[in-house]
Image 1 (cartoon, helix red, strand yellow):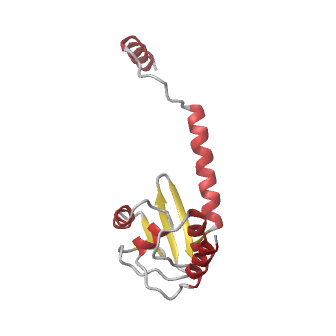
Image 2 (cartoon, helix red, strand yellow):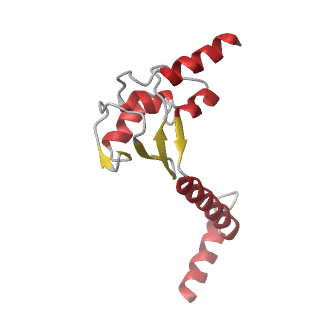
Image 3 (cartoon, one colour):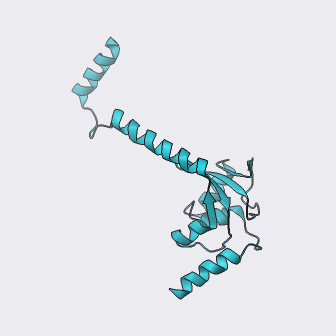
Length: 141
């Protein structure tokens, strides 16, 4: 275990390194691969200090990054840099998520749960008889 704490310390102190945005997103475990991180950046799903950017953008400590992960949006502030992909607890020390972002993600998660309660998906596809009943019901409305 002493090795992992030393790695965490070197990551925290490594604030002068030059690091690409796609590599930082990958190292912080926002995206599974650097290629996926690059695609998200090029697709406009990642903003650096409120602006679209390229994957080769240099990340600086204190910068604000807004990114999309699936259906969630996060806004994080860069605290540290790492060229290596770290374990999740260590990777989470490289950034701070803003309070507004945490609240917004919690609200969206709650809305998704409520939507599943009100519009549950059937376990099987409707057969021919059920489809006819559905069409009849829809035509009466």
